[in-house]
Image (cartoon, rainbow, N blue to C red; front, side, top):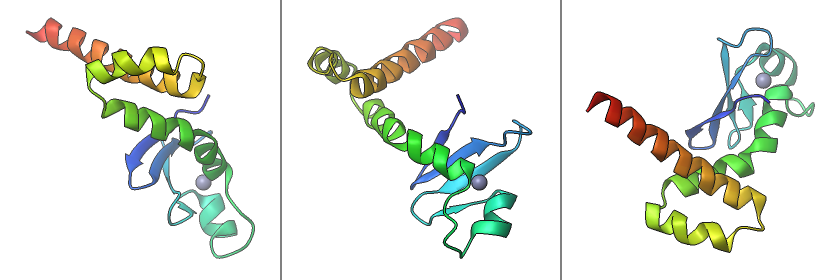
Length: 112
Ligand SMILES: [Zn+2]
């Protein structure tokens, strides 16, 4: 799976499929991508999204839920998880936020 990172304000960083160290920026609000395909062949036309835009659209809902879960307190996450047990998108996002905190705490413990 392509790793898409939210940069806020509807912007997402997507690695190039040819060179994973190269990132393209997809702006869902402005409907642009910084890749050559979009810049040279799609911008200002009705040809639609490049593959990065398509990927971001597919992942955006999940990423937004993760952003929301990151803003929850530990207690809120603990309370919400059983409520959303049947919703894989929401419970998945809550678990991601919880796992990130655990990993962060483990890292802090190492350097304490
Ligand atoms: Zn693109």
